[in-house]
Length: 115
Image 1: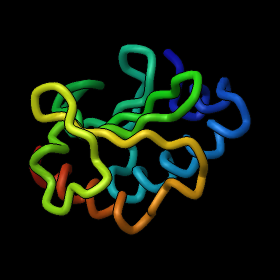
Image 2: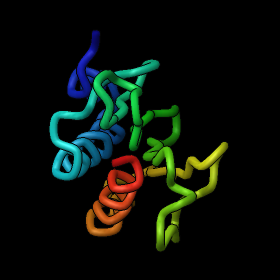
Image 3: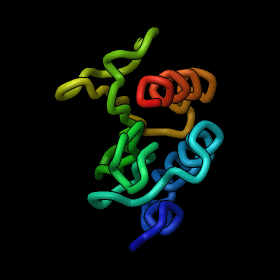
Image 4: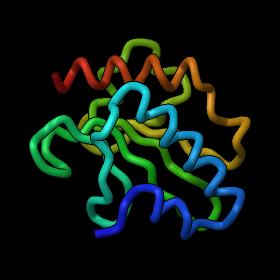
């Protein structure tokens, strides 16, 4: 199985920079909970990858997506685009798009919703 750092290492430099910043930020809120599940990094609270998932990072050709499984339930969801079911995400094209304080707040709320 590929690890999150191994996944990030396969990305083009500009996406790796974004993914590494997200990984570092996510690990402050969900330490040791990341794994590659269905081909991309997912952080979960359950006993196995994908059980009680909280967030994901997924690279696409033109952007990196940061998603929250229960993102539509987050207070102050400004910047999050609603997805299927209760998911919401944001597309990132540059490191400057990563607002550490806002993302950490979203992550803490998402963790608490799952916990």
